[in-house]
Amino acid sequence: MTHTELSRTLAPTERTRLRRMKEKASFERSDLEAILDAGFVCHLGVMVDGAPMVVPTVYGRDERYLYVHGSVASRSLAADPDATICVTVTHIDGLVLARSVFEHGVNYRCAMIYGIPRRLTDDAEKTEGLRILTEHSTPGQWDYARRPSRKELAATTVLALPLDEASVKIRTGAPDDGDSPDAELGLWAGTLPLTSRWGAPTADPALPSGITAPAHVVARAGTRQG
Amino acid sequence: MTHTELSRTLAPTERTRLRRMKEKASFERSDLEAILDAGFVCHLGVMVDGAPMVVPTVYGRDERYLYVHGSVASRSLAADPDATICVTVTHIDGLVLARSVFEHGVNYRCAMIYGIPRRLTDDAEKTEGLRILTEHSTPGQWDYARRPSRKELAATTVLALPLDEASVKIRTGAPDDGDSPDAELGLWAGTLPLTSRWGAPTADPALPSGITAPAHVVARAGTRQG
Image (cartoon, rainbow over all chains, first blue to last red; front, side, top):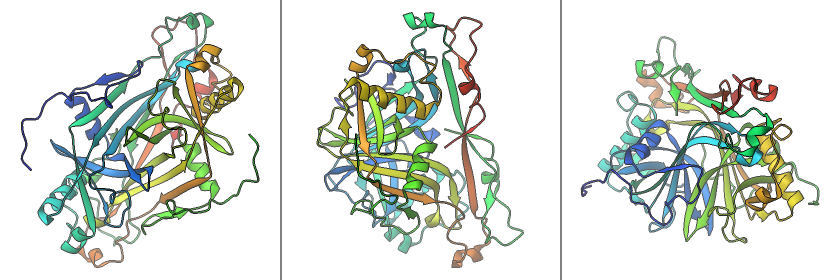
């Protein structure tokens, strides 16, 4: 895939322009990339039989595209090839507990990407898409596990969604009613943070004794995710 | 709202019948309820201007409905009142690291609910919806914080989505290639668990000294989420 120079900012479109006030919208590509790199599961929105369908699925990315994959039998990836899809990646960083119920909210980082995905067709391109996906969720695993066979590639759909039209929203910090009349109520207000961490690897019970987890898996235990 | 007797099982429809093999589909209402009760943020899928839009938003539930809310200015809640929406709640429990890339996956619990939501109109009904939402994300907070005023209610849209048509999928446990020819490769396989926990509450910097966090907030620190 060849491309023109990639802009470091994301031009707002009618659907990515932020309408509400509380969150901060970002049109910096670096914020989009940071949100995508912090996660590995997105929510893919497609139209199926006239209704929206939202399915969680793993993803990966390179400079230009977000990749998702699935079975060729998957309904969510078999939609109209000219149809726009929406991929949303969300990290929940905590609850925002304000003095009033109205000002309650969530600290979060969210990227919504809109576009018409391209279905990868050639084996080399599909393999590269699967490499990006695998390395995104588990760095080091592509060189460790058995790679896809031609038969497995044929059973797999890989879609590449251009990282061109995106809405990035980030909310951080304290509640917003600290300078409102509600501050007089004498109620506690603040945030309750939420953190996700990897645990220790658990071996498949079918694994023969003496096979230890590889370093790239062991090293992840205890680290933060998101 | 009055109702007929609620079935403890969810009758599969064309779009909720599980097509793929790896995950376990559940049509038990108790599994749906457990997934909804373990989380507080869903991904709401709606059609906006002919394309799917997937937005994270907090939710609550009672026996019959899932509730979401937002600003009356929100595009995602202002869709066609007769249009079907999809609400997805996902918990990611870990990575499934198989011997082959093809068998890699995710342990997860996911509920997808389809339906045409009802827009709550009367103040008492909206207040009750907001109580359910507030208590779902932060039990104890409705009786602590200042409740919505009439003006705030007027600025808020609350939707009630019937818990009638749902697809519940759960994957747990080890990779699936332990009895395949790949088991001969001598590669490690297993799972890398992921856990989300609440941290200690952080006071709003605007909070006067001497106001301590309420017990229902403090008690949550260190507990598991999801």
